Length: 303
Image 1: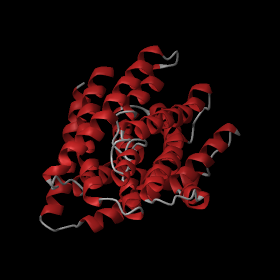
Image 2 (image 1 turned 90 degrees about the vertical axis):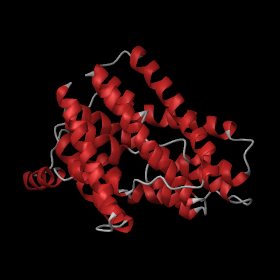
Image 3 (image 1 turned 60 degrees about the horizontal axis):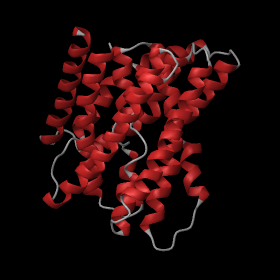
């Protein structure tokens, strides 16, 4: 438990550092966006290669994407009905923020630092399903309510999936593992070195994007979205943790992933669909803080 708390203290200090260097204009949010791209396209894939190179595929691992997709489908249906009394634009924005999790930027650093490589394998498999949830379900919700004349553009929905470097790395690693093949040694050496930057960079980016400035009229809706999101996430994760007939590592990752914040991709969706970017950014910031506290509690309890 001491190791967990010391890890969270160190993580908090790195996040505070990110906030301070942004506050004093040493680095800007624009720089933070560039760092986010480096994390998602370089350090995260390197960590996936490094941590899952010895992956032994089994049924429990194969179920992780299904858990992510099934939960995404349930929460999507819930959002459509829960926000039905809102105006069309707010309904789309609120609903879009319900499914999907920030696995790459939020879960990986903690799982990497506190749990083991087996836990990282389960996290990677969950994120495969989560990518589908984000780019199909959340994207479709945002697109549908953003305009009176909706047309389902499959090219716009599935193009991000095919261009997602983390998802492609997950898929290639999974295929190699099933075929009992391995990445070449030089690539593994590079991945091992680069992956060490993933955790500190992720926490630094969290601090850079940390902000709590928003119009007071939006607070009620922020708490409405976050309240529904976390209440369902905590309830479902606890139910699965105590009832699933699988190993404890799988159940821990379910418990962790279902309380993660919305992914930073939601900001890109907000821009694309002309939603309130300040609202979406503030909600993600609040969710980051809430998830951080919940993860600290979960890691202390389950460990």
